[in-house]
Structure formats: structure tokens, C-alpha cells
Length: 121
Image (cartoon, helix red, strand yellow):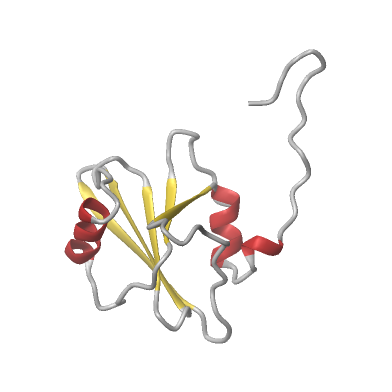
């Protein structure tokens, strides 16, 4: 299981991305299309047009890291998104489920437990 601190956000591109893009090309998308800080340490995920490849860009300890996964069979299943959204936030669990090829929209979660007398956040 992937464990990320709560301060690390995961943003998934809602439109397919040309997988020939390298770190610099993906950085430009994050900056110009999403208006995000590429040096933040957040994870920026991109899916290919065919839906069988994912790249994840992040900045760590003075340099960029690019993770790449290709499914041999099947496709990555994106969660439902608004038409005008350029990216959609995911949590660490949703990212792991997506990378395993599971359809994120079909996964049902139990409501978060809150102590008696407290409201959920």
C-alpha cells in the first residue's frame, strides 16, 4: 500500500496526455494548464490516449522523479469528472486502485468514523 502524508496531493489529468512528453513537457502542462507549483512535492498523474499507460511526476529532494506504468492487458479506469475540470484530486488509496487497473468509480467506501459528539470534516 502506498502511504502519503496528508500534505501531499495527488492530481490526475482528466484529458489523455501524449506519453512521449518527458519531465519538461509534463511540467509545462502542470504549470500552464493547471496553475500548480511543480516543486510542491505533490504527485501529478497522466494517462495515455489508449489508457494503458500512466506517468506520475513529482519533485523530491532537489530533482524530478517520473514514475511510469504500462498495463500489458486492460486499461486504466478514470473516475468520473466534471466536463470543464483539467485535473481531479485523488487520495493515496484511489491512486493505488487506479494503478492496479481497478475502476475507481466502482469502489465503494465505508463512511469515515467520527467519535461521538464530533462532526466529520
